[in-house]
Image 1 (tube, rainbow, N blue to C red):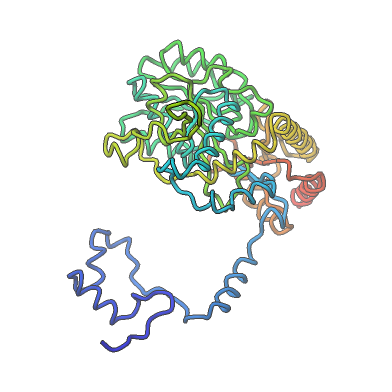
Image 2 (image 1 turned 60 degrees about the vertical axis):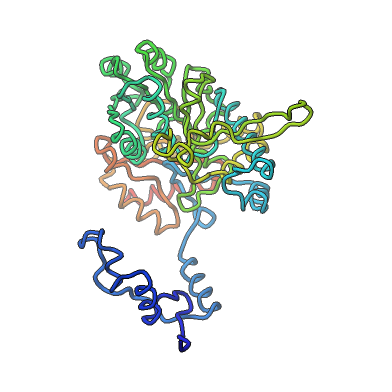
Length: 465
């Protein structure tokens, strides 16, 4: 066969090669491979691909594209809402970039995976210490999927089919929960909040909970940043009706807030991204899931749990993957969960981060965030026609800013802030229309006094116009 000059990046883009491949698999045209896709979703025209470039030209082109991006290293960013700007110590990146960790996927062979297994075991141990739970796993995608898995777990344990959640919750988190639970016949119901404080409306909770309720879920701090003060009461109401109590947390906050295990939580979920993981353009993330040491709960946990054991003579210690019979590669359709892609590297980063800070360091970090958050709220309150925060509750890291009386929309304000080199808070007007023109602002240890003062002064200028 004559030599065919190929495309430098896409070998099967050459017509001659396409014909050979199609003939081999027994089709007449490429469209036959996509016949299951509805016509309305198919692209009708050819892709507008540029001519081939050399490696140097490609690198130069990509760098030009990347130079258009602005990160929190270039401009102050006050956006959180589920993926937060925290400082990641250099040693965290150094350790997780070691090939022993970076190239590991799933450590199925314990005899050659002792290093990564031990690191994950340490991660689980620290999550248990942080949440006051007895067991934690190490392979959840993010907060949303951890919540969804916890809901299904609760339904299996209690044999009930209702989950009660706060009305104030990240909409995408709620969508993920409903996507996971609807096929299993689980009904998700929302609990109202108190208008002035944002706290769970206990009377509404009492009216909606029933003998069909598998679990009651709360977030502390909430999606809008305020801390729930009635967690013990919620736990008592849930347990009185034979339901489990699930708490969702920002793990950073546990350096100063009471651990969920101390106020009666049966299952704890959350987002581990703040623990030494960069924002990474929105992912990968790290889902936290831990529970009490009840075997009914442990056997229904999704994902992987790393255990420690000893040799027969008891002289040496070894690490292994425990209870993996819950996974789909062994149990197939009878599996507890289809969670598969491992978040091991993110978990190792969290373990390194937590070990670096320690309990005192985490507490100091929380205090630092609280001081800066309160300073920001106080300064923003100086601006005429702005209400900060919207709810009369204690806030951690995030808080609401209402612009209803300014005559401007959050979308417009954020556009003006960007023009002046500031990334504003998240626009909540579509997610929670009843809150009006409200934005969710985030303050962490990375925000300097200069950043905060600049935000206040620029907002004053924008709102005067």
